[in-house]
Length: 439
Image (cartoon, rainbow, N blue to C red; front, side, top):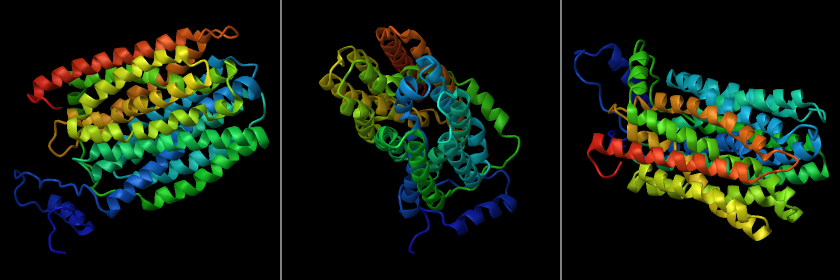
């Protein structure tokens, strides 16, 4: 090799530790951290993160299939609101566990989190396949609690590890990882709908479990950390106080809270909406796949734009358009309308969801980016609350058997538009703080 300035090797990492122990001048600043912005190891880690998110959040984005099947068949004696608690508690745990998982990741337990999370998720998934019809508690324990905890241990570390390799291209890297959720949201509904119809619920869930088993082995093998763990004691409390008094960051959290409160309602209810409006059965089976397919591009293209024009700028536009598009569901009472809604909503909501985390780079106040993992963990925990309550609230507003769809539609739109307004105010505050036109 002719240069050693761009990408630290494992030996450099070891030297970093030795420098901590034998630093001749304790007042001298630590060496600057460089980012390779690419390379085989970096892109393999991104691929592994995308596979992990495919297996976890891809299942979350496919819950609309379960919502429809449970409402009409497996748990038909329960209301849509009661059934949506299964998916809401699951996604709540995905994000709520992000706070301790982010801390453990920061301490260097990345691979421990991956292995334990994979085993817990796969065990719970296979147990779900054994759940008996009309046994709500069995489904809830396996799908909500077991799978949710396993996903939570996997999701945040798989996303945060990209920060070890990328700085300038961080939005793109995170977007590619989160795009795995949309790809999973395309494949899983097709698998589940067809196998549920032909072989039953148990074999449909087992097919997903066997697929995830192979993919998670691959993800565990190819993902690697690069930077040394942050095991310095006594640093977290001051940093936590700093973040909790950062007004733009807190306002951004409020906007993200509102946006996530509304963004996932169509993902939970679109297939049920199509079924109850007597749309073509084949189209109904693929309605979520259409939405998630365009969401793949929505989680890549806006992130490419964000790397050039700033993640906050891009997020404001994306969230505002997403909020307006929810109203289009009023006209989606035929196959053409539902398909158009799925295409456009999938793209723009994908951009909104995927930009929430990369936009946190706008708030970094430490030159080495050491505050980013804690910011991600705090935001993740905060977002678990709207994900827990938003979809059951929408289900309750449906008021079955009347199914008053205008109520959850207006609710979702108002939440998204209010979140977009918070982002605009946040942008203004950051603009004043950084004195720059591009954030």
